[in-house]
Amino acid sequence: MSFDNETLTHHQVQSLSTLTRVRHSRQIFYGWWVVAASVVGLFWGVPISVYSFSVFFKPLMQEFHASRAAVSLAYTLKLLTVAVCAAPIGWLTDRYGARRVILIGTVIFGSTLLANRFFSGSLAHLYCFYVLLGLSDGCVGPIPYGSLISHWFDKYRGLALGLAMLGIGSGAMIMPSLAQTLIARFGWKTAYSILGASVLLICWPVVAYFLKDKPGDLGLLPDGASAKTDGIDDVRQGLTLREAWQSPDFWLMVCAFIFVSASVQGCVVHLAPMLNDRNLSARAAASGSSLIGAAVMIGRVGTGYFLDRAFAPRIASIVFAASALGIALLWLGNGSAAFAGAFLAGLGLGAEVDLIPYLTSRYFGLLNFGKVYSSAFAAFALAAALGPLIMGAGFDRTGSYSKPLIGFLVATVCATLLMTRLGPYRYRPSGSESWPV
Image (cartoon, rainbow, N blue to C red; front, side, top):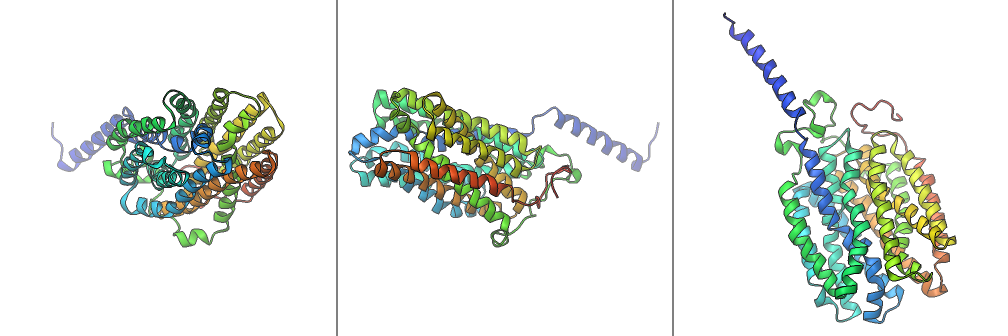
């Protein structure tokens, strides 16, 4: 039997294409391994410096004989540093890749935690310690990881972001109780040192081995697509930072993020002392912080799942309304009602960290994603820095958390309304024809 060369080549190409599709269909898309490594990286980052701060709160007050506002200032300075560093981190992520930023940041973050004893001599030293944490916090947080995931996924971007941010949610649920146990057994200094060692010995090797900046580094396409014709966004599409800043949608988003961030972060940081004041034990108060972590985790995955299936601003409005209800319960409720309020408030925080990168990618594209996202995240972090300070100052002035909680309730309702004013996506998911246009 004979075949001409042209016919044989055609059949060979068809066979090779078929075999390639079958082989890829039987393999797990490498992007999901990137998501799994991101979960590990995020677990050993933000939950230590943010969600566990509440259980360090009273030990720090006792150590330094300081007021609640004075201790809150340490957390505020850390988040202000995060806000200031957000734009440079976004630029570095766009310029050098998220992987390099994450690896360097993880080493600095873990080493700073290990060195906490050098910053325990006075309250001023404590402030320096938290500023140093803030310098590396952004490198192990949502900015580089959000950029990483957004490049690996398009059609399933919401779910991938939600699963990756599960690292923060699970850490927020586990870390407060873990930190409380370490503090009770060894003291707050050794607790921070143990957590720092775990960052260097557990987290860093995992992210160093599995993280890759873009699917193109492995000859792949986003979502594991087989061809460019599958409708995947070209990563070169998008607005510049200046063009994004000129968009009304950007400022609607930023204002909503500011309101929710300040409100929920204020509740998160002061939750343990707030529950202590209602005659609950330190362990029960730590359980309340862990409950927020569970809500954050549910908010991460749940929001990510629905972002791929519905219009994101609509999802945001629903979740922010739930957070407003949660703050109202923290203000008015006791016992189980307060725990329910903590859970609902946590849902908003969980959703927000998914929403910021997702909305950034859909409204402004991936061209300058790191820069645009980091500018929105800077506003989020700045508000998160002010929220706990407002709570602490409000308590010190009035002897109660009631007035700050009322203000936060109003702010969260405003954020809910702002989300309803966002226009249609500029960069729609591939194959999505049901989103608003």
